[in-house]
Image (cartoon, rainbow, N blue to C red; front, side):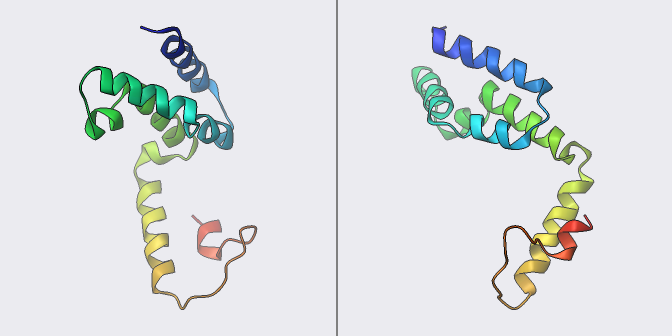
Length: 106
């Protein structure tokens, strides 16, 4: 395994102790992580499914799920219902710092 992937694997292990969702998302969304995963997937002759199920993505996704309480399943259902309710409302401008009351009561 190349040194970049070893470093990213170590980083993914360390981030399992993270408590800052924005930091996890920033790291996961970086070009470095994405490009390294694609490089690894292509070297194995894989495509999108292999990319989606790459161990680094699973580690990041698991941490995001943990930090957002989505491991419980119920939080996903409530968030999905909230998103559907937003789609049914008349369009209005929503300020990023003032989410709808529905979101605050989730």
